[in-house]
Length: 388
Image 1 (cartoon, rainbow, N blue to C red):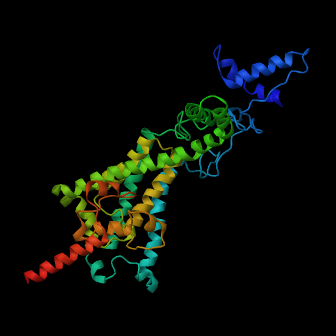
Image 2 (image 1 turned 30 degrees about the vertical axis):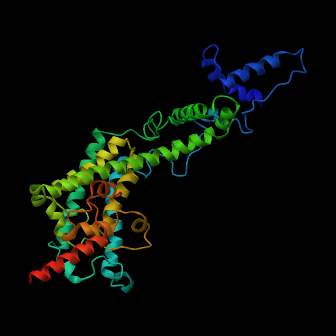
Image 3 (image 1 turned 45 degrees about the vertical axis):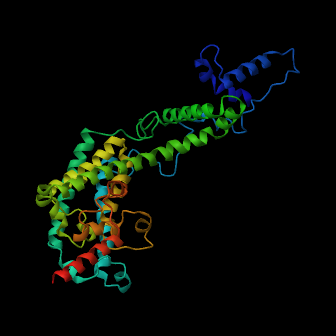
């Protein structure tokens, strides 16, 4: 057993510089010396104190092409969906997510179910009558814009392409698909350096690294890095959309000729989420998502999830309902209720954030709560009565 263990580190020790203090190589040297001392059968061959019982699984030799543990979401297929490239799937997933979510909310709109009415954000028919464009026209514009964005996205991802999964020395989004071994090894070396720098290279640090190093490496490589990348992509998207969205409101020319078209929907509904001027839609929605995708280095497979979630969240923010049991409505500050305030006359200069976080509204002082909206309406009503 020990011969098998030691042989697994031949390359590591062969590459170690003379006089290296690598504990594994030092142990191997002691072990080989002891085995060569046939005249000394009483020599005790010590086990390194930091070895666990599963040493062959808890150290980098397990990072081989045929011995990698993959997470449940990983697939070895060249493309997730048969006959559809991951690149195209990421773009089509965006469209499918939009219409599947829209169809659900449209079903609620036409259902006439009484239990639904209590959750509508704008209940009266008068509010709906304020919409200045027909649903048929909204449908036509949205389909046209999605076609334009899909073509734009495909061209962007083809000529400014993010690498395939996974990808850099420290990220599963920057390595060639066949190089998981190198990616895992790089992450492990990072874990090892951190472990030894905190706990030292003596017995305790070595023991922790040997016991938990590989499991932590897998967790970082397959879960933490992709999650951080996804959050960073949404942060970039939110930052881009907040400042551009606010610019389209504060510069009168941009609002009058471009963004005011989207605000013809005073009472938003789900499939009208992308309704607007084609130029604004391309710059605000299409370019923002593709920039976030490229800057973070999301892979095509990560892009499938990123674009689908961004599309879903955009539709959900315009759905016109606030369900207290809905996880997005309950746990995200940027919800349908939050964005509905922005579509009302009293809140049109507030709540620019979209589609996920609200931190820029908080930082920039443009956040408005429902209570503040109602208070502003009451003040306006009192002022109008006095004028009369």
